[in-house]
Image 1: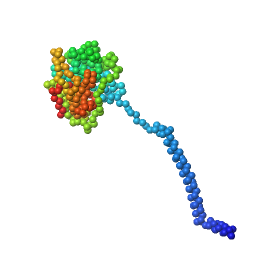
Image 2: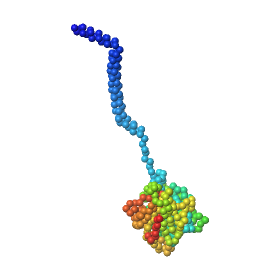
Image 3: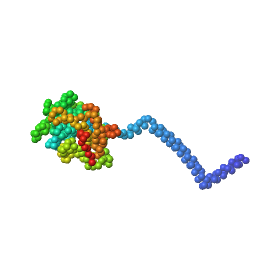
Image 4: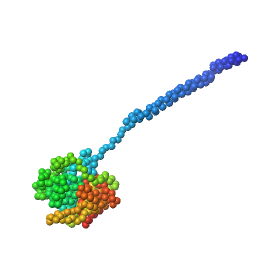
Length: 381
């Protein structure tokens, strides 16, 4: 019986195998099984390769190599000039400054070189007339002429002490000359041993015809051992100028008068586009003789001081106390800021603070500082 049954089953399978449908089913089953086997092998291999790749990619050597290929942004050093906060080249930020006394009688206008000064101080000298002390960095300038150079007064030496600069002048009041000697000022005396750094313009009469230049001032710095010496004075705080939408009204004018006549009436008119103030003296544009351009400033400061006193020489010379504290006005970016000024000693920096007690940052660029008495009006309109 078993043999008969096995023979019968074999006969049936052989019969089915001869049929087309059966052959198709068998081929399909075999091919499917073969495909799944190949796929299993491929997937297994792929998993192994991917896992190996990820392991290698996360290794320290590969990670560091990838980091090395990422470009880095290097921080560029910025060099700020001590005198005026202007961004400059390396090596030009801390040159030794030079201060020059410059006359302001109506007959000598326009003066030469005021437009190239970083800081200018203006105060009464005598007889209702003002005088300037212009502070330069002559090593970055090519100013052909500076002047007319005039004599010193003691209160200008108070401002000079804030810079410890080389001081160019033509004589001075007895008190000023005493301070120069006792305070060991870096002196450049035109009427004495330092006359070679100055010259007389023969087209004008003395004493209104004495001049110097950036070239001669640099030579003086070199001869006195200061040209390669870094300055170390305390600078003002500076900031970038306001964007045009944040600036004040174009044409706004800051007006004050040192005397009671027109000759020393000063107007600073705001130019919103250039974000600067243009100077008018006696209702006329105040220009620089070197290039004919109107004098401009980024910052205009009015410092209110006590009434000046006569210095006791009988020649009408004044003495102004510029130490301590007092009220002030600071104009920049088309805005006027009520301020307080403070100066502790001759060598301490005069600083300006807002009503909250914070130091007022100045805009980078030229600054003019004016000393007027508390009785004089300051208009801003």
